[in-house]
Length: 531
Ligand code: GAP
Image (cartoon, rainbow, N blue to C red; front, side, top):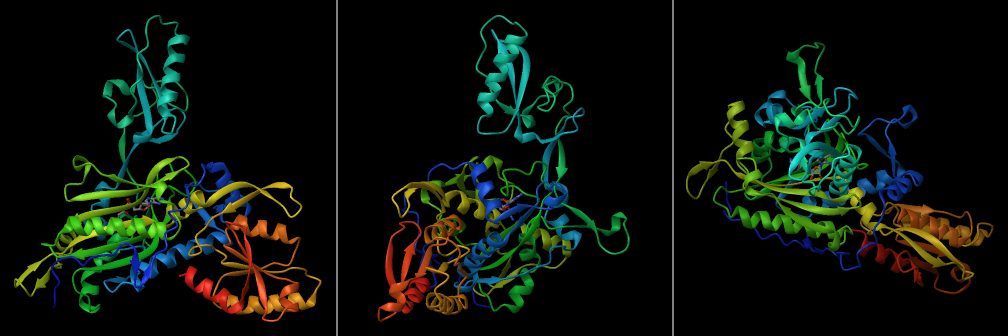
């Protein structure tokens, strides 16, 4: 085998000749409420609650016609840029249910846990690190405790609760500012004194205990413990378990990556924030294998930059992106460094994409557990070694929520008669917009217009997701397309059929400007913008 010892330069803005056109230079989008996003997602068929007719199922969601398109476009952009347009990354599709020993070796059976706190009275369950408490301290003495669930307002809620507590108990003296802690920090003697958020009374919360988030199932006809298997909680282990298969068959050389898109399942204690934290979700992960002597920090930084550039290429504004570097003391012992790309969601700045330098931990674990060495031979030094890995791991659903939040705007605009009206618009990048172009004959009762429009529609839909709409006033039709994020509308009007050189009105979503365009230029525009 031939080796390149040091990592190749990864141009963060280039995908095989395409210089990603980041939309990040556009002004930061206005603040948007989650209620508006959830309402639009339902109203226009992007996202529904799973099993809604039975009252919904917490932590599970369905993607409607537009949501399915949007999600597919996000996946396709990632796959094209990450796999097809790169020479150093190959794809994989591993099974969702793998041998249970995979999850023992990876450490998930023993350690894929969240700290769980029960309220014995209300039967509510909380993630301990999302349940906050504070001592109520008056004149330096602790006189009681208050609690609140994690939110943007946790500190303010705890302060207000402490003031209420002091007033209700008629305690005189000076209240100290509260110091918020989460339940993982509670001392044993404090737990009985902290009120449950469900009942407001102390005495019912249990100490935190480890709750394994893997979904269990049974494989085969037996229901005993020997038949237990797990729905995968991440796609990554498929890449590690198949590393040798890909190495032996894939004509790959270091450094190289194995990428996968697929469903993952986690029995989250508190699924929340719409699709941000759900129990069934989709991941796009890539394991980038490097030589043990490679400059891992440089490679790590290059992948972080690549991920940031990619997010901008699908329309996320730089103003909403930031980095969080995990403190060294909180990293797993094998981890060399983890940086999360954060996104400013309406409910706070939260993790979107984690990029971890994992050393050779995973391959070593699988080698030890399976007895199958995962080393490769270094022709240069004539030594065997286990490759190290850089892992960019992101959730499709989190990206989809981010593009919905960043793209959403409500604006005052003037209609044809000059009256001010509201328009709701989703400023999706053309790369991911569920509908690329809408074809609109000006009048549905003019067969000459309809015939041209239908012909254009037929041609366009061979290559692109196109919407044909002839119902209603043209202004109303534009608004409908704005609301689902269609970048362009093409109107077939009288000029189209009366003037030579057949042109259409091209109406642009964001600027709402109109110009004339012919068919060849329309295809050219789409070719350049939808890639
Ligand atoms: N293999 C590493 C790994 O799975 P992770 O940080 O647990 O790392 C990677 O997950 C990404 O998957 C996260 O950054 C997030 O985008 C997404 N993700 C994780 N848990 C999720 C959940 N419950 N719902 C939606 N997306 C989730």
